[in-house]
Image 1 (cartoon, helix red, strand yellow):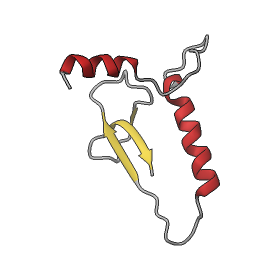
Image 2 (cartoon, helix red, strand yellow; image 1 turned 180 degrees about the vertical axis):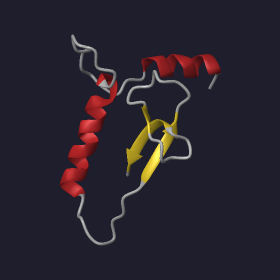
Image 3 (tube, rainbow, N blue to C red; image 1 turned 90 degrees about the horizontal axis):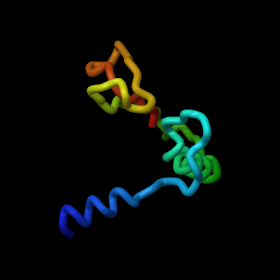
Image 4 (cartoon, helix red, strand yellow; image 1 turned 120 degrees about the vertical axis):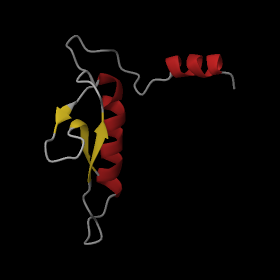
Length: 84
C-alpha cells in the first residue's frame, strides 16, 4: 500500500458515527468507542483474586492532548495516565 493511500484511509477512519456536540468535547470522537468498551467489560468481566490493577503513563510532550495531566510521582510526569 502506498503512503498516499494509507493517508487517505487514515483521514476517513472514525471511531464514532455521532455528530460533534455543540459544546467543546475533546473526547467526542472516541466517547462511543469508550462506552462500548466499558459496556462489553461490564457484561463479560468476572472479578476474582487473579485480577490486578496497573497504572501506566502515555508520554506526551505538549499540553494540547485531551486528558493531558501532570503526575509528579511518575518518572515521566506529563501525559495521559491509564488504569488497566
